[in-house]
Image (cartoon, rainbow, N blue to C red):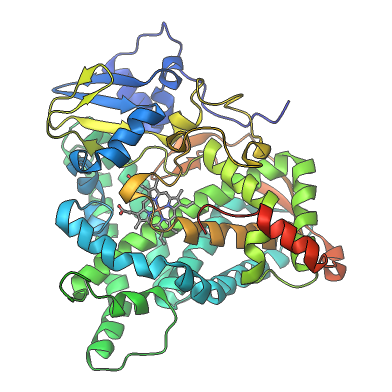
Amino acid sequence: MAYEPPYPKPLDRSSKQSLWNLFKRGRRSWLATLYEGSYEGRISRVRLPGVQLFLVKFPDLIKEVLVDKFQHFPKHELSETVLKPLLGESIFTTNGPTWERQRRMLDPAFGQAKLKEVFSLMRGGADAMIQRLDAVEDGGEVDIEMEMTHVTADIILRTILSESVEGERARKIFSAFHLFQENAVAMIQLSFFRLPLWLAPRHYRIWKRSGKEIRELLAVSIRGRFEAYQRGETGEHADILQSLLEARDPADGSAYTLVELVDQVAMLFLAGHETSASALSWSLFLISRCPEIQENLHREACHVSGAREPEFKDIAKHRLIRNVFRETLRIYPPVGFLTFRKSTGGQRLHKHDLPDGSPVVISPWLVHRHRELWDRPNEFDPDRFEGGLDQPPCAYIPFGQGPRICIGAAFAMQEAMLILASLARRYRFEPGPGPEPEPTSRLTIRSLNGISLRVWKRPEVAHAQAIPVEREEVLMEAAKCPFH
Ligand code: HEM
């Protein structure tokens, strides 16, 4: 039997919880409000005061909402309320022609060519992480959530703005973001229950202030580059901001304004590091509990790049590492539920007529553990991904689906595989002291009590031999990534 990692045990079918009890449980984590029955069936209706909410759980219905009829299911204003202080009018929450323009203009910044261009900036962040971990004594304890948040924030600042998180401004952004994320949870919960946000006055104040502070700090970097670009100093940066400065709307040739740039960069900072940090922390936790898998990853990483650090051409060759990462995204999807959609135009899903304006919720967490879709849904088994999944596409949605699928999916895969390959080559991880991590829902799925691991160096890596070219080609073929 494969390893079954921790997850909050669902509420018993027969246990009837009052709305107030669910509200209290949800304060700790909305995962704690799920019932046994939540992991079954096609669609559930949840009655809240003054509104019915629809939880859509089966692939054919998810496809209707996210792909076939996505224009009838725009993003709900509830998500905008919670994210606005930080993201302004960003692509994450807009709809209609505004969203279409933003997506058209952002897409090229995440194309294959750009990913190759930013690889060396990513590598810089991974090298800094190695320096930090090399300084830890053998067998020393590492707060791996903290470390993964550090490296992914560093990589996102390097790839977007060519800045490192070690700089003074970046450090301030980092700590303001920590406050934003901590306090946004209370805001999400209040808006879920359609209560005014000022009911939690302390959280409300900190959440608003920290969102504003991050935007102001980011604006300093962006304004300098924006004004230089306007003066005709086009600069030599290979980063994503450079692509955004150069972006023109194919429909009318317009460029981003300064405010639009701040909105998009703030959104990329949030979406681009918090999600990856969550997925990488859980990946390392899982491999620390599965020594055999960990040894295989180490061997693969050494075979692919020998005694040197992984390079761009190596990334797609790590078949096992990719399977581990994809299985982690199944079992601990960073985005536990997608931004709420709103039903419009008199939609019918399965046997339900949806009143216009009803919130529609799709949860990767529930779909990925759905009992009718997955064999042994709560077990960690990276081999599921060997040779491709049998499930329909909308049964596996860590990056969403349809026209609003994550724009950074390929970026995230490249970054995660670089980090995991770099770590699997050089270090061995073991569970740290203390209790098992307890998955909880913040902006992403995190551990309530942190994730502590012990780390050992592997001196033999200095003598590792890369495997011969013919074999590399076989690996490359097998390692085809749907996001590349
Ligand atoms: C493991 C890492 C990541 C995961 C699991 C993830 C997941 C997701 C999901 C589920 C959505 C769809 C949300 C919805 O439909 O409501 C999304 C959207 C988005 N993500 Fe990611 N993401 C990751 C990394 C990134 C990165 C690295 C970036 C950029 C640097 C990024 C930028 C975006 C953007 C801009 C959108 C909005 C797209 C739109 O609405 O058109 N994400 N992401």
